[in-house]
Length: 93
Figure 1 (cartoon, rainbow, N blue to C red):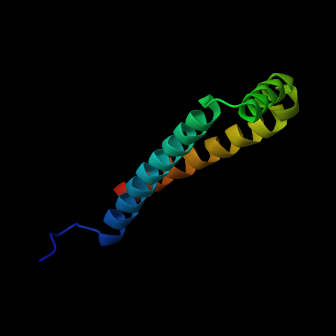
Figure 2: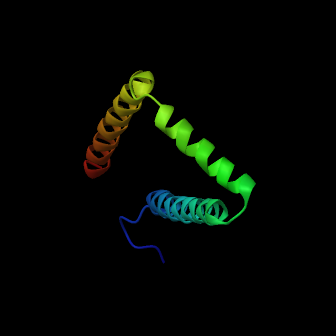
């Protein structure tokens, strides 16, 4: 039997959020580790690729992406506010 006050949708939403977050973290760490292992291997072409990546990273300018960064922060704040409102609505039920 299902306990009174237990909402299956809330359980599923939280389970899915946790599962997707863990999967994304594991996938990203494995991807980064594979690239680091590949770039740390020897060889002339790999060394050239490694230098090219370093040069491109040094040429990257923060001001170019300031507008995008501000948009991401703004949307993050909107998401946080919506989640807080959702929590208040769920608590008032």
